[in-house]
Image (tube, rainbow, N blue to C red; front, top):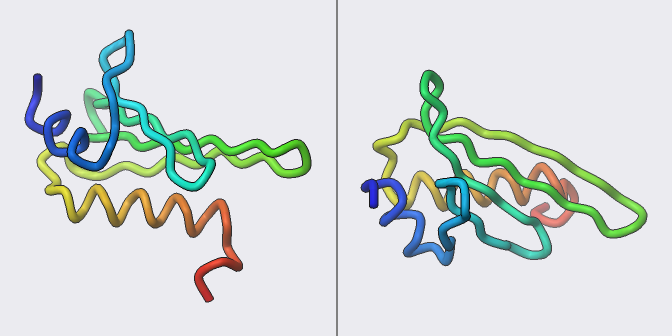
Length: 85
């Protein structure tokens, strides 16, 4: 298992069948995959029947858990813009 997978696994993500990692945060399905040129891609998908969101963030592959956690919080802020005011 790659280092980034070990670090993000500590945040509650689990391996997927295609080599990425998947987790859920406040109803947002977040998938982490390594992009060959852009680094680590965190994509968040949210749908509740009235609202749908699709967000992608790229961070360096060698990012630590804090950077990964900040990226997850940024996805949360983009999906729920009024919740962190």
